[in-house]
Image 1 (cartoon, rainbow, N blue to C red):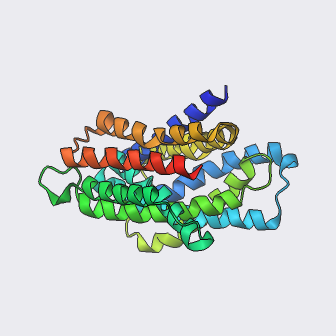
Image 2 (cartoon, rainbow, N blue to C red):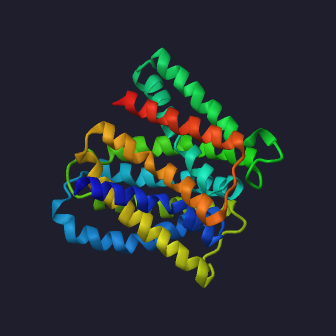
Length: 284
């Protein structure tokens, strides 16, 4: 049953990039409404579970800060999706494991092994290939810019994961930290709105439909299932399951949007996913 919940959670979040593309709104608009539509549902879930929420003020504020970081990450990721496509945009965002390893070295003195350093170099080389090297057959409106922005999103995503992990130290329902993080994400999106000339509080009816699916499917159902199931699974299985998100999203990108990647981009995506898998296993 736990495996099924985890798989359903991964499947749910794998559609995030699809819903963002279908909504066809600006990056910050997508981030804001992902949080705005998810917050009331998460609040209702938390109110039903709040008796089990024993977090202190520190963890609550860490969750809010993680949401601020997530807003920046999502804004960058949404922009990379527009420039590079749903599939590759999601693959590149998952290089966060590289930056988590780098942060562990800088902050905690966990010097990477030679194998890990070679793997990190391979992953970064894979990201370069996903840009298509400015070749005429590369998929995306601006694939090189999309790869660079996606890489920056990976850096912020790593910071988000580290802070959000610290916000979840106390056992209890996962709805509390997720609600606080979502509140921070909404605030972060509003703060970033001034940098998005196409931000709007009134998306079209069609856009709102996709944004609701993004919020409920990914921010609520997806993350609640993942937060409940993955801590109960063996670490190796956890790493394999989490890699399902970019793999599924690449498939959805091909099926929904006919994202015809070049040979270089397919090669780069494969290198990135393989390298992330190796780094994930080595971290456990």
